[in-house]
Length: 302
Image (cartoon, rainbow, N blue to C red; front, side):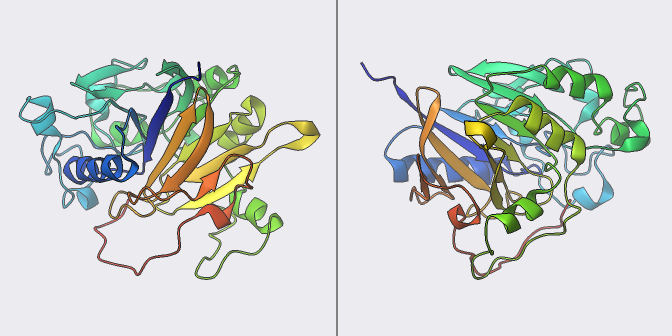
């Protein structure tokens, strides 16, 4: 008997926009004609109860803060959503649970670093971004805006923990691995309407983790830009396919879905139309991205 298939959806930086993400998942489920089994968010979820919470960065207080309805039981997330931390979170609420916790029914924080088995898939994860000044420093309790900011940086023991992982189906990181634009250039010119970001985007430690662990897939956020590139694949090894997600302002490039058969992805696509943009056996790169859409209004950024 063939293994049961799974529909797994990655979502870019939510920044408090839980309502629209739920509506997008409804639309995708209808388009694919099946239920969404698992939702994975790549950080900057911002599960705050109030938009003007003093712990949020000033630039973020114009963003919605809809999580209170889920925490208070007014609304319930329809599908299990698991998220890593970015560099904009309610770190005071997350601090005492570095191995993860459930914040509301069907809303789960994975933790700062490690591996969880979700629906039979081995999911590795590293929360936060790289700040060299704080990399070797101990993590402080986030009692102020300054220490809350520092909580959004990953530390050396967390990177070392992730580096020991093997046989990883999917890895979640917030900040891009360094060198993705260079790798994309090696694989060919960007398609019409696409430009390569700065070669300095991302961090080298996450890149080193990907090269050490060799996960089958990586999803990341933070830079609010969709990107697709394959890393590795030397010596007969299957390459790691990296999907970078835009922030959750519009669904076309901030939603990336994968249909698994067992532990292997058989097809994948962007947005909520249900249209397949990649199938197993095809090359993975910028050509797998959706056609660039006309720019629309986007809320304040990071």
